[in-house]
Image (cartoon, rainbow, N blue to C red; front, side):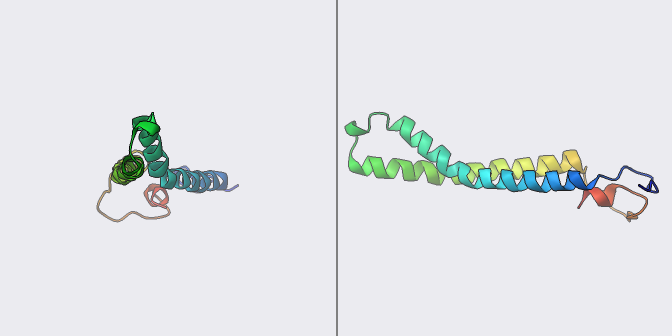
Length: 107
Protein backbone atom coordinates (compact mmCIF):
# COMPACT_ATOMS: atom_id res chain seq x y z
CA UNK A 1 0.00 0.00 0.00
CA UNK A 2 1.38 3.31 -1.05
CA UNK A 3 -0.06 6.39 0.56
CA UNK A 4 1.06 9.08 -1.83
CA UNK A 5 -2.26 10.85 -2.44
CA UNK A 6 -3.08 13.86 -0.32
CA UNK A 7 -6.70 12.71 -0.11
CA UNK A 8 -8.55 9.50 0.73
CA UNK A 9 -8.61 7.02 -2.13
CA UNK A 10 -11.51 4.59 -1.97
CA UNK A 11 -10.51 0.93 -2.01
CA UNK A 12 -11.58 -1.38 -4.81
CA UNK A 13 -14.24 -3.11 -2.72
CA UNK A 14 -16.04 0.23 -2.34
CA UNK A 15 -16.28 0.57 -6.12
CA UNK A 16 -17.50 -3.02 -6.45
CA UNK A 17 -20.12 -2.55 -3.71
CA UNK A 18 -21.24 0.75 -5.25
CA UNK A 19 -21.59 -0.77 -8.73
CA UNK A 20 -23.44 -3.83 -7.44
CA UNK A 21 -25.76 -1.70 -5.33
CA UNK A 22 -26.56 0.65 -8.19
CA UNK A 23 -27.35 -2.29 -10.51
CA UNK A 24 -29.67 -3.79 -7.88
CA UNK A 25 -31.34 -0.41 -7.34
CA UNK A 26 -31.83 0.00 -11.11
CA UNK A 27 -33.53 -3.42 -11.30
CA UNK A 28 -35.88 -2.53 -8.47
CA UNK A 29 -36.74 0.88 -9.90
CA UNK A 30 -37.54 -0.47 -13.37
CA UNK A 31 -40.18 -2.80 -11.87
CA UNK A 32 -41.52 -0.32 -9.32
CA UNK A 33 -44.16 1.41 -11.52
CA UNK A 34 -45.64 -1.91 -12.63
CA UNK A 35 -45.84 -3.38 -9.14
CA UNK A 36 -47.11 -0.15 -7.54
CA UNK A 37 -49.71 0.33 -10.29
CA UNK A 38 -51.02 -3.21 -9.87
CA UNK A 39 -51.13 -2.83 -6.09
CA UNK A 40 -53.09 0.43 -6.39
CA UNK A 41 -55.46 -1.19 -8.87
CA UNK A 42 -56.01 -4.12 -6.51
CA UNK A 43 -56.76 -1.70 -3.68
CA UNK A 44 -59.15 0.30 -5.90
CA UNK A 45 -60.84 -2.81 -7.31
CA UNK A 46 -61.09 -4.57 -3.95
CA UNK A 47 -64.30 -6.38 -4.86
CA UNK A 48 -63.56 -6.94 -8.53
CA UNK A 49 -66.80 -8.89 -9.08
CA UNK A 50 -68.74 -5.65 -8.60
CA UNK A 51 -66.91 -3.92 -11.49
CA UNK A 52 -67.29 -4.28 -15.21
CA UNK A 53 -64.70 -5.92 -17.44
CA UNK A 54 -63.75 -2.50 -18.81
CA UNK A 55 -63.04 -1.25 -15.28
CA UNK A 56 -61.00 -4.35 -14.50
CA UNK A 57 -58.83 -3.70 -17.57
CA UNK A 58 -58.67 0.09 -17.69
CA UNK A 59 -58.06 0.86 -14.01
CA UNK A 60 -54.83 -1.19 -13.76
CA UNK A 61 -53.61 0.28 -17.06
CA UNK A 62 -54.35 3.82 -15.86
CA UNK A 63 -52.54 3.28 -12.55
CA UNK A 64 -49.53 1.73 -14.29
CA UNK A 65 -49.36 4.61 -16.79
CA UNK A 66 -49.58 7.16 -13.95
CA UNK A 67 -46.86 5.42 -11.94
CA UNK A 68 -44.16 5.76 -14.64
CA UNK A 69 -43.95 9.60 -14.47
CA UNK A 70 -44.06 9.41 -10.66
CA UNK A 71 -41.17 6.93 -10.67
CA UNK A 72 -39.28 9.11 -13.12
CA UNK A 73 -39.61 12.16 -10.84
CA UNK A 74 -38.54 10.09 -7.83
CA UNK A 75 -35.47 8.70 -9.60
CA UNK A 76 -34.50 12.11 -10.96
CA UNK A 77 -34.72 13.74 -7.51
CA UNK A 78 -32.77 10.89 -5.92
CA UNK A 79 -30.12 11.02 -8.64
CA UNK A 80 -29.54 14.76 -8.35
CA UNK A 81 -29.77 14.72 -4.56
CA UNK A 82 -27.31 11.87 -4.16
CA UNK A 83 -24.89 13.54 -6.56
CA UNK A 84 -24.96 16.73 -4.54
CA UNK A 85 -24.51 14.79 -1.29
CA UNK A 86 -21.69 12.54 -2.49
CA UNK A 87 -19.87 14.77 -4.94
CA UNK A 88 -20.97 18.28 -4.13
CA UNK A 89 -21.96 20.95 -6.57
CA UNK A 90 -19.79 21.40 -9.61
CA UNK A 91 -17.03 23.89 -9.10
CA UNK A 92 -15.71 25.55 -12.24
CA UNK A 93 -11.99 25.51 -12.78
CA UNK A 94 -9.25 22.99 -13.23
CA UNK A 95 -8.97 20.08 -10.84
CA UNK A 96 -5.76 18.10 -10.94
CA UNK A 97 -6.48 14.39 -10.82
CA UNK A 98 -3.50 13.65 -8.60
CA UNK A 99 -3.93 16.36 -5.95
CA UNK A 100 -7.71 16.59 -5.51
CA UNK A 101 -10.36 14.01 -4.66
CA UNK A 102 -12.86 15.97 -6.76
CA UNK A 103 -12.08 13.99 -9.94
CA UNK A 104 -12.29 10.65 -8.13
CA UNK A 105 -15.74 11.48 -6.76
CA UNK A 106 -17.00 12.14 -10.29
CA UNK A 107 -16.08 8.61 -11.47
